Length: 285
Image 1 (cartoon, rainbow, N blue to C red):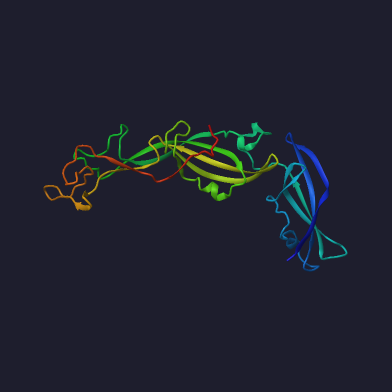
Image 2 (tube, one colour; image 1 turned 90 degrees about the vertical axis):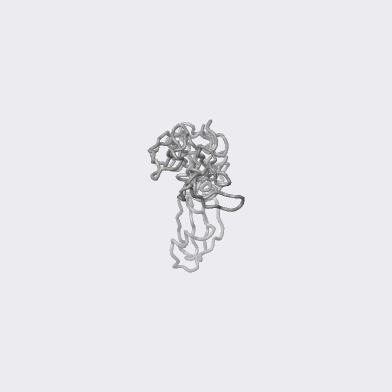
């Protein structure tokens, strides 16, 4: 395995303009000792300790530069010695386009994301109607076939920059979470957050996460609502199978603890199927 010996600043550097931005580039040279005079160039370029293209950054005069290219030259006399040149610059990543370009020159982690509003169609099984009335027959029993209701949810698509001091798992943990408090003027559990994509980019002189989010709004919350029905009732700690006066099993969720009729209203039960989050990391307004 080749060995990294030392490094020296290169004698080549320049400022240039591109798309109205001032770009600074600088070369850095690294001396590598090979295992043999015939060792392959690819192995030399992969020597442990050398900068990694699109990963390694350096600070040069207060400017944060990212490694963009790496090349190697073999010493003509001492063939086991190689000189690896790494080119650094602060040019923004090419695939960086999130609608925030009007805020160039400021700190990207303070930018307010620009959202695209779309809608998404899906079908849901309804247990209550539009007025909140439980959907059951006149005997307060659920219908054999649930009502399948076509509906839509409002969706906010946006991208925001975040510091690179968090790892990918920190970002992925936010996926499929709902707001635990009021967010964007809507009460808890009405916003479902999706993480669509996260990319490490180099912009404005340093590395950032560019994270693509999706917020889905549902007015009835993202809890799973079920009819409170079944063929058993609880008598103390005992679960008792219930039959009516004709010995037929029934499905009444409002039975009393003795198996009697507990009233005319069939209730519903709500279940949390998504973890909650404060959404404090989101800057969308």
